[in-house]
Image (cartoon, rainbow, N blue to C red; front, side, top):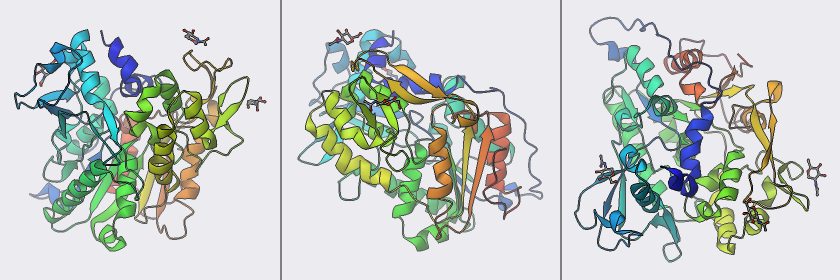
Length: 437
Ligand SMILES: *[C@@H]1O[C@H](CO)[C@@H](O)[C@H](O)[C@H]1NC(C)=O
Ligand SMILES: *[C@@H]1O[C@H](CO)[C@@H](O)[C@H](O)[C@H]1NC(C)=O
Ligand SMILES: *[C@@H]1O[C@H](CO)[C@@H](O)[C@H](O)[C@H]1NC(C)=O
């Protein structure tokens, strides 16, 4: 079965199942279609561009002769020139031999000469269906809900049409934006494609600015894109940014993933982006507890060394990931943050004997101190200061949904109503910083 993949790509696989544990209701509410009226219902709609979370974009691969397969089976596609589905290929993941190939071909490596991450030699990849929400992963009900399928349905019921008023921006979720001083071809490519998509969504809709909606990891890409775009471009093209289930603090599950398989540190750059961030967590807040010493979000380099990783890992963290994490800031376009709260969430990992191969003890916070099941409450509340209190951020609204999970924010009926309401602005325009729902 997929156990091999589980070992190699834990983050990719256990996120979706974990996130659904606390989801309250899998069914979706009907939305009354807005009264768009007349013959062209799209005329009243602001164009919308969606960015899904981790693992929700599909990737195709093609293998050249340069690929060195770990088994003959993995080399079957070498030199055929055929693009095949790499992620998420459910058929391949059911066969242990093929699953090992998927894991190998999904791996990224750091190329010191290029100072950038790239695919293994001989592996070429591309995102499926850029521009459309049809490219988002939807092959199981759980994937569909995690990957904005329920939100797409709700928007279509409200009159939106894929390719006309509704657009999707899938991206290579293994990658992450890197510090500006570092080459990052993946993020540069995303930036070019996303900018062109927003501009064409606008021009196809009478020049109206677009509503950008991200979920989870999509928020790192969208926010970094916005913050690197010229202010005049943002004002012209972005009517509102709706950031669902993202916070400036990262999350602890990434630490557990890293401890379980330290090689992910140098093969999945998006993992560093997800680590608990010193932007939110102080040096006296331990994320990892051992008998000998504790590690806070400020001790990531020491933690990487304790995992036995070479100094390159800490260098990549400090030069590529950390500056982006510390640079999480207000996008200076009207912004609504939507987050679940009040769900039991990991706060601390205990590896008492300092053996990081063991299953850790986990300290959870719940009740009023709970986050969204993935993001700690501190990370969610930090949005109100990091984004909301920035004097240059003219409009900021926070919607905190009690008892809603990380994925529930884009799939539970009551949450969808709020998110769609924000997109269509059925709520009052000037409401700001509304507290828990
Ligand atoms: C899924 O992967 C298998 C290899 O295990 C490949 O033969 C198949 O073509 C892939 N599916 C698609 C739709 O590309
Ligand atoms: C580590 O953190 C725990 C829990 O916060 C605390 O009780 C303990 O004293 C700390 N240990 C060290 C060595 O600082
Ligand atoms: C650490 O834990 C793993 C898994 O339980 C075990 O196999 C290994 O022997 C332990 N290492 C040490 C040094 O105790």
